[in-house]
Structures are given as C-alpha cells and as structure tokens.
Amino acid sequence: LTKVIGSGIQSEFEKRTTRTLLYKSLRGKIVDRNNTILAMSVPVNLLTISPKYIEKPIPQDKIIKLSKIIGQDPNFITQKITDKSINYFVFKNIYLTSTQADEIRALRIPTVSFEKKEERHYVHNNLFSHVIGFSNSNSIGLEGIELMQNKNLSGEDGLGFYVKDGRNDII
Image 1 (cartoon, rainbow, N blue to C red):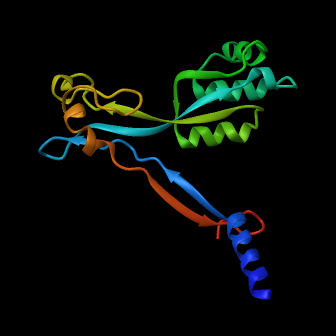
Image 2 (image 1 turned 60 degrees about the vertical axis):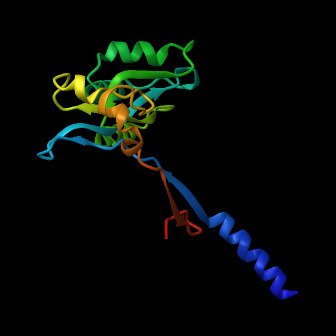
Image 3 (image 1 turned 45 degrees about the vertical axis):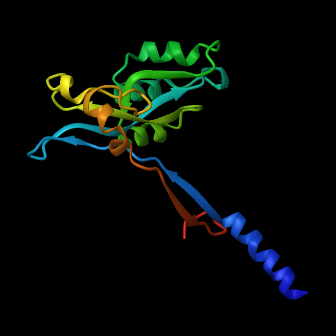
C-alpha cells in the first residue's frame, strides 16, 4: 500500500516541478566562400500594449523614459496608451534588444509586453538579392538561395527540460 501511494506522490511531484521549454531555432546564416555573412536572423522583441485594460493613468515621467528607449514622440505614446478603444497595440518597426526590453520592464507600465520575433538581416541590403533571394515573416525561403536551401536553413526546434523547487527557482 505504501509503495502505491508513494509512487502516486512521486508522479504528482514530477508533474508539478518538471517543465518543458520549446527552443525555437533561428534561420541559418548564408555566407560566401570566405565565410563572410551575407544573411542572418536576429531575435528581436516587439513592444505591445493593451490600453483598454489600463486602469490608472501612467505617470508622464515613465512615458518620457519609454519614449527615449524606443525613439518615439511622448505625445504619440500618450495618445496610444490613453485610447481605450484599442484592445492591443503593437509598436511596428521598433525592434528592441534584450537590454532595451529589460529597461522597459523595469518601468513597470501595466499591460506592456513583448512579442519575440525573428528578423532576417541581409548584410549588404539588396546588393546580392538576385542570388540570395529572401524569406517571408514565417522564415520560409521564397526566392534564390533562401528557397533552394530552405530545408538546411530552417533548422529544427528543440526541447529543454528543467525542474523547479517549491520557491519556483530553477534547480
């Protein structure tokens, strides 16, 4: 009887503490014969906000700090944040580094979050575009080397496993 109960507790413990994390692979690099990078993917963060769910007004000093980090006019940010008709707003074409995202998190502005995306960079812009081609927003090659080598450039997503203790710290 104790063995049956003990194994049930053990499996319940494993369900509560063991976590699985999906690691999304970045699209591979395209290099020339000298190993110079011609195309590469970079992880970026897109800033999002849900103005409809902000209950208290955001202090002006936080809006000014946010505007300096993302390089936008404080009046534009105030207009978007105070527009209660907007459920969800993405600041388009503002790709943030991890450091910038951490600075914004430190401001503790309600409903601000980040979407992780992959941005494809072509080092020489369109100089070799007739050969390299391009990929779409889902990282699928559509033309040139991007298309011909799509399977090799796509990579495979991976899984990571970790265990957390009672304080929610990773062991």
